[in-house]
Image (cartoon, rainbow, N blue to C red; front, side, top):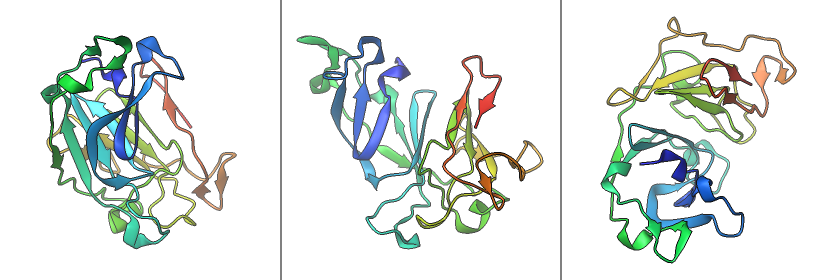
Length: 202
């Protein structure tokens, strides 16, 4: 499967984009596959034909009661991916088939705020993927007024269930400097990685 087909995940439904034939008026399409619960600010990744959903917010209020400590995976290989016979810009949802979300028992990191709250949400683009590793940088762990943290987490998606690295395995903090750091906290990070998987940019 070409994983570039699955580009955007939002709210209680899946939206996909065929990036090889990108057209703003035709490319996005709602799939007949619902998320395990309505979500926003969640973290997503694809590895080994599995779509991973981690954390986020599953309610309309700005309280801890609406933050999700859960994680899920969806086996994309169980679906039949093909283009519509009437348009090469659309996925043929009539032959897509079905797949079931699997809950994941991911152990929380052993350091940073996530070790206490078990909540992670990205109100901005605070994560990037390098091969099987999902790097989550400065996520928010509380309500909307929480500015986030300087913690860096790495989740190994090749493990079953995925496993967070320990604080001694990676550089686990952004430190105390930088233009977006205020009082030791990170505001609105935008995280990406280089095409050759050698650098991560914040």
